[in-house]
Amino acid sequence: MLVVEGEKTADAATIRFKNHVVVTSPGGSNAAREADWSPLKGRRVVIWLDADEPGSKFADAVADLLQAIAISTHVVAILSAMPRGWDLADNVPPG
Image (tube, rainbow, N blue to C red; front, side):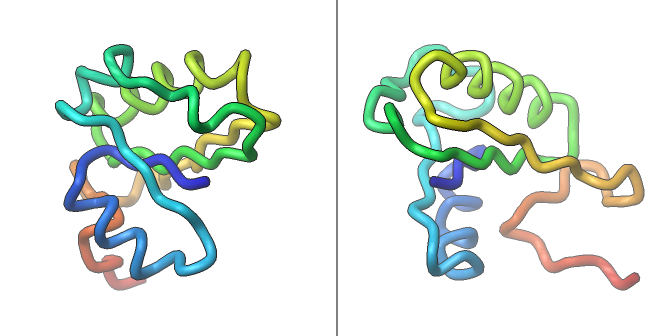
């Protein structure tokens, strides 16, 4: 399972990661705690955050919520060299 922030990013991640089921929460980065994450119970989950403060907060909130129900939860570390706000819906920058 791959969790991303936002529907646009989920659509793009589905194309990039064909062997993963990609999900997001409705309502944007501030609504992670409002979503029903129970379908991820017993799953291995990777959280791919956006390269900004709201993305980091979203990833932390989702990881916290999934800690008790997922088999494993991993947050992808985004390189500090990535442009602010970059996400999986954007092209990978040169280099």
